[in-house]
Length: 125
Image 1 (cartoon, rainbow, N blue to C red):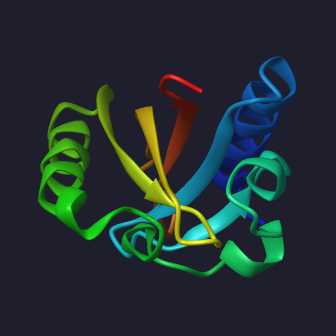
Image 2: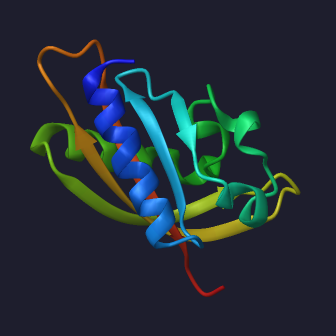
């Protein structure tokens, strides 16, 4: 495992431990494929973490929100920082769940990939 990924996974797990009700995910950039998912996905979305590793984020974001999420991710990549937006996720049952997310970019010129940590919380539980 590369050093950047190890650092990102440590940070993601810290966020998941600090707020067990949050959905925390790590995606590769530019592929936008999931490499790590917090256990909270089981309770909130009905997915086991293993079911979501390897997916593209568009597989669980409501299609009407894809363009909005794309713009947000591009802004995070361009600014090298964090961005926050609201959108809907699709649970395994098909139910829409309104959420807000903060995406934070982690990059290193020496690493094969850059990574984004997504910290997602439900709106109006």
